[in-house]
Amino acid sequence: MVAGRDGLTHNMLSEIHNHWKYTEAVRIKCMGVPTVDMKNVCFQLEDKLFGKIIFRHGGTLILYRGRNYNPRKRPVIPIMLWKPHEPVYPRLIKTTIDGLSIEETKAMRKRGLAVPALTKLAKNGYYAHLVTMVRDAFLLSELVRIDCQGLERSDYKKIGCKLRDLVPCILVTFDKEQIVVWRGKDYKQLKDGYFLKDQESFDDDDDGGDLLMDEDKEHNNTSL
Image (tube, rainbow, N blue to C red; front, side, top):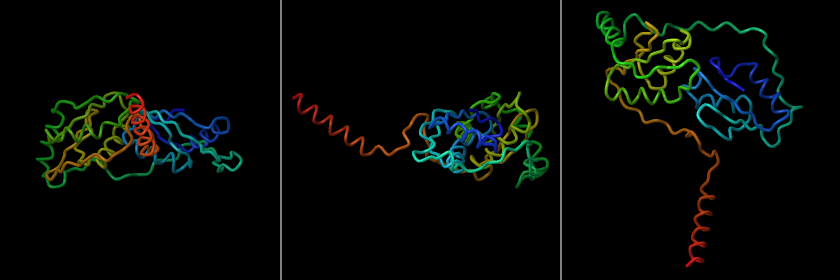
């Protein structure tokens, strides 16, 4: 099952429950905009479906339905035959950046478009490392440009909005299919929050690790 640019949709919840009728776990491949914040994707899947993510590698997840799952008691999710209208959000790019004049804002946008691109985003790619890349780039430069040629305008505007909240940073411009962000005057480096690595067990393995160490000690003693 693929979670694309729209993320966890209404109909996708119903499809996962349909798969759980015949199999205990569902493999979900996440692509595009939602992968910028994989922590939120995993939280929403477990929160809305009451399942448990038992494996994650990159954008691929395995969602387990649970030992006592009963398909007859699954929540009734009506199928939506149309896509609801998107809410009206405030403008992401302001006429003047806070703390700067109009001339300084124009000059910053011009400089931002001339900065070498940090990376080029592929359509429906995997962007989980983008936040860390921008934070590292801010250690050397106050402006960061991300090349988004080939992406839908709505997609890279959503990516820019996520970067603004997760890095955090200030959006400068979306002109010429580029995302230009500014670290701000009083930028302070943030330590990355701990989250699951590409391959990692979800269960605490303290007891298992101690048990393996005891077995190794016994094996070494017997060999001596």
